[in-house]
Image (cartoon, rainbow, N blue to C red; front, top):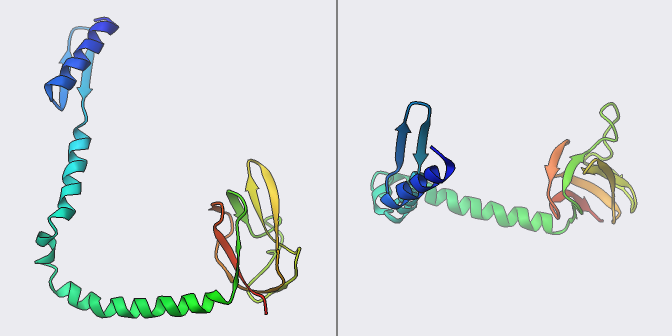
Length: 164
């Protein structure tokens, strides 16, 4: 069987609507699978639309989650109002954040440390280049938002600093 015959067979199977075809000859074994996964995805997308089915067995759960929702809603504004007085130090680049200059050295900053403008807070490695991230504000480190040796995105919050 040559390449052109195989291509024609693939086109034929795709048009026929079959999800899988296996062809075995003396020296050739061919299995052609078409987009059956797409059909499964469509079915999965239809399940949330039939929301009446999950609601019946889960009727007690909304009652339990209703009190939890206001509690979570109350906690979120409180946390947001607490964080609003702090300055967020964000990542200027994509890379891997390191809180230490080397594995055997102590971290650059810890929670509670006082920092001044220009102090090194961490290092972000991007394409084998180690970039020191310096503080643009003076203050006190309130919270470290990223773990050591973890990947960070551009503009991702790294530290919370209390400027007072």
